[in-house]
Amino acid sequence: MLTGEQYRASLRDGREVYYDGERVEVADHPIFERAIQIAADSYDRYYKPEAGAISDYLQTPSTIEEMRDRAELKAEQLTSGSYVSLMTLLTAADRIESVRPQGSAAIRDYVREMQVADLRLVECITDAKGDRAKRPGQQEDPDAYLRVVERRADGVVVNGAKLHISGAPIGHELMTIPTKAMKPGEEDYAIAFSIPVSTPGVKTINVTSETPDMSFADMPLSEFKHDPVGFVIFDHVFVPNERVFLDGETEVAAAFAHSLGLWVRMNGLKNMADEADLMCGFASLLAEANGLDRVDHIKDKLAELVIHATLIRSTLEASILNSEVTDDGVVVPNEQYANAGKYHAAAYRTAMLQHIQDIAGGSLVTAPSSRDLESADVGHFVRKYMSTKQSVDGTYRLKLFHAAKDLTSGAHAGYNAVAQLQAGGGLYAQRTVTRGRYDLRAARAKALEAAGLSNPAEAE
Image (cartoon, rainbow, N blue to C red):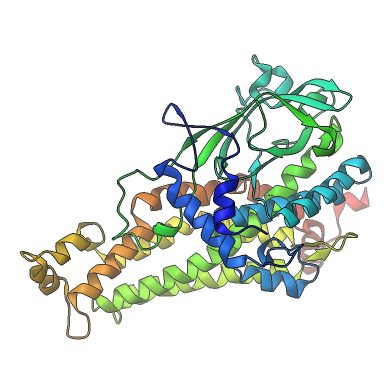
């Protein structure tokens, strides 16, 4: 396993990283420093010195109890994303076994290698896509979807790009899979593999929600939640055979995207269940601090927040309890509950945040800063007029507003609103999977029985 310092050193591998139009050394550039430090701290948190040890966070659960225990672990985006990537690959390995057994074997070897080496993976799935109304092979630019441009005896050469890749500049491996199902004739686009970020021909063009002069004194929540995001360019990149998991088998190309969707949504559901509890806590504290905790419409909003949190937590529990175990001993959560829960959490998240904003009032965005509080000239006025009663002094209430703003309406909150909505494919993807996994036949049979009718389709 790696320590935090060893992780830092591992980033000096010649990777081609760009930020704001210039090539940069990611380990030295200040815009990436906080994200690297957060990841390094996570490395130290799970570090074990024994030879061959595997991070508790990267262990693959083999029982439902282990999956529940795993859901209680905490890690930053880069580490949790690595777990999602590994579980995605193992789930896909089971689903492609009958069509590409050598790919399944390569995946299992690769997962073990990553666990022992303690490396971090980033998920590369979304292509540039070009004209969304056209299939991959119909695009004016054939590179709109990542594709194989040359096949050699020792591997393949790929060209294209993957967009919106969280952690791209600070991870180690690019776990790259088809963005959707492929049809016969699209064999060059049915390609899945993983390669180091430093592979020749790979370039990452990065953006971040952070600015170099950002102060976190008034942002206690987002201070430790930051992840740079990149466009990953594959400019005629060679992938050796042992790193190729799928090559041309269009009939199982969707297995990777479906597997990733399940694990991304499951991880998102876990995070959103925790966030829903956090929302309830802030709503209650703000109501109390404003002296509104006994007002009927405030209590109604609190009730809606509590019901929301309860439903999200329930779907998480149901997904874990109804897990299946593959022949490889990998526990796979129930897709029906995971997708329904993620949909509900994302679809109603904005409404829940609005409840908090309404309870908080205008001071959520107009409260003075921590620097004002510390000012010798005006600090005492801030404390005086931010207080509400003897048990709620101005300093406490001001800091509570700062934290609530960070959650609901600050700079990071805007980024997070889009990320929570789009993670795992957006609401449409969750609706599609939930509908597809639901036993509608059984529901129809119950309705017919209740109505005393027979199925006309069966009568024919």
